[in-house]
Image (cartoon, rainbow, N blue to C red; front, side, top):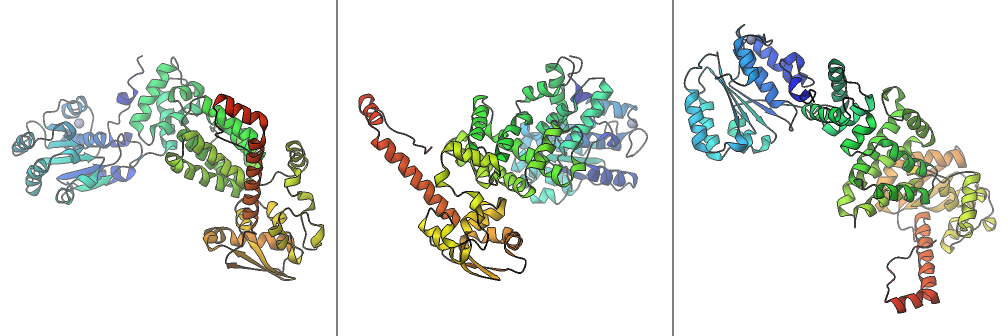
Length: 528
Ligand SMILES: [Zn+2]
């Protein structure tokens, strides 16, 4: 239990020990060494980024027995008393619990008197935005004509709520949240110094959970040491934090890479059974997709400590870069939409299904085998007969009258679209062929899909030239596709299967008997 003090023990005592916030430290150090002092400083930033820690270090700089300095000695009575929280000329006020004007007036009246033992009277006012209006007015009077021996250090998480009249009299510094990598690095340094054994993956988990606050990271590390009986292991830390171990998300992405819908839904159900937060799951999924994208584009940037590194790179080779980008976007949007979903599981599953819809058609034997197994071959186009420009019109399998029009000029647009992937496929599936000549292909799409065209138009042009001829000119125009675009054909096919399924249920004597005898209701029908 002697470890349960890391956050206090490793609290920075000097500017040199502060992790991150280099911009603030440099500005303050320069001001101190050049003797350019300000009467009021405002530190802003989210909780736990080190606002009051910096304020206390500044108090030492102002009062250290060695003189005004950016490197306080740490051993003189002033430094030690400030460290121990008993320096009479350092007045710390938590505005969250100290809002009355009388208190504030009393405090500020005392500001007029010279410091008792120090060089400066330092007022640290934490959560300063919580002060009442009259308290701010009392403070403003002092700020307008500050006694030479007074320094205010104001700290707030919400500078918007500090009156402009006060803001304008302060030198303002914005403290940043620390990137997880920096936090993990520092944790490593701390645990090595403390002689606590750890697994690097655990430090990444702790750093991410701390969301940019070193203080939170150290507190969590204390917890993890206690939880792990003196060591910080990855799996135990994950359990403690209630995070989904990323390994758990690999099956989802692997099912997507296999274009295997049933397995994808099984994995989603497994996450549901474990009672994990779907919001956290989507966040972790986005984070894993980011890692995948890194592995594909800048492999050297993937840290050696990354958990399941081999699995990550194996997956990175199976998915193309564009698909990973799309999945990332779908995951982050899915997280945003989660609160609007009928329920969290539906929102989560829908996000996965959207990814599945973007998944390139699986190629080769396994895809055909799956088609046979699912018995849906008749409803699908066989990719094997998919069409080159020269394919005769009447030999093309066509399931829809509207689709037949698309084969005019010999190009089976629907079959071709099926063989595309990612965003290019999405764009193509909203287009119809207006006209096809030997060196010209004119496509039409609804104006609504303009963003897709802007993102993937050039790529689709390149893909089509690749397949249909280098000298092909491709023109797009906006207009009504009259239900003939592949996406519309597919939607109709889906609706037809749904109607068939409903009709089959309706006509099933057994179902009807159950409904009557048990006073039951059909709540959901899914086509097989
Ligand atoms: Zn000192």
